[in-house]
Length: 176
Image (cartoon, rainbow, N blue to C red):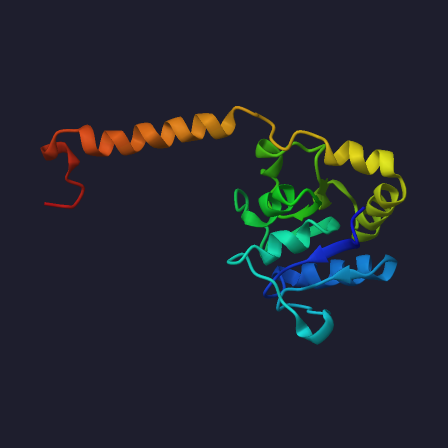
């Protein structure tokens, strides 16, 4: 049992004020905790951050996390959704449409799949009020390709090794 319904952890509003607009809509259904510096509604202005794990610890206590990127540009996917997954909370994501190329569409609520914020709130209510549906989403695999982390690690290793193993005359990158 998680003591908090949902959370928003941010330092500022997003483009077009989507974070604050959605926060208000969801908060009208049930209290949304906001321990960031933006929209802070915590007792004594308490805040969390990633430097000391207080952000993750707080998110773990919430069923849902509002993960709205600061801007909706293709391919711009920040730590917000991964932090939510890491904390075992269901992300409510708004941002890049390419997010579903990396993350399993059945493992989070993608705001772009709904016609309005009201429709998203209805989906959140449905999951909040049905433990079986909530847990089914929470148990979904996070990644579209579970082999992706290993493959990326191998590609990075090959890239770094190439830098050091190539002949010195080919390693020079600046204009001569």
